[in-house]
Image (tube, rainbow, N blue to C red; front, side, top):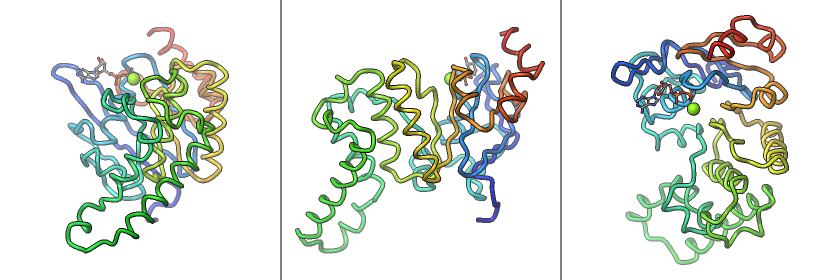
Length: 257
Ligand code: ADP
Ligand code: MG
């Protein structure tokens, strides 16, 4: 890699919506293999920053660099090819599909097999082998998240917490290197939250990089080794949790709303 330890670098990011400047020069780096928290009061620009990184919005200014490569303004579908994914809420059309089907889909789409399928003759045996391999990966994922028993359930019938597990599992099926999680614990009961956190820690041990937006400050402080604080579209402070919780400007930003 050209830049050793930096997985993701955001530099001078700006995003405006009409008269609102949602992101106003945000600049920060996320270290490879780290679990970094992105916090800040409501409306600070955290979600918009995620959307700019993953190509949902095109930034008005600034750059996004992933693993040393400029990915500013890439299309959302290209993100997964780079190894950068964010979790998405289970869309309405996914709700009627089973958990198993939900996990099969992203992996299939990612392989882009349609192209070579159309120009090369493929034997039935090859198709069967690939389907079996995919199914094995999906089953491994179900086991990892301990949701095998939900395999045949429609995604729409899952509880809030189970849905969050599925969203994370889906993102992992694209074989990413870095995951962006926007409020992954919202609406999750404490038992499942603990489980979800354990999974995130396990994945981190495996070398995945995490950037997590989360409302619950204590949760971020306890689980992330670095914290970035956004306020009014730019970075107010960053550092170790201890330094952040005692930072006057951070306290003021939160109290001042
Ligand atoms: P956060 O995730 O930190 O709560 P957001 O990034 O969602 O903050 O929002 C930052 C600001 O941008 C807010 O004032 C919000 O109303 C505005 N905003 C976000 N998305 C849009 C949009 N699609 N159109 C117009 N304004 C938006
Ligand atoms: Mg948000």
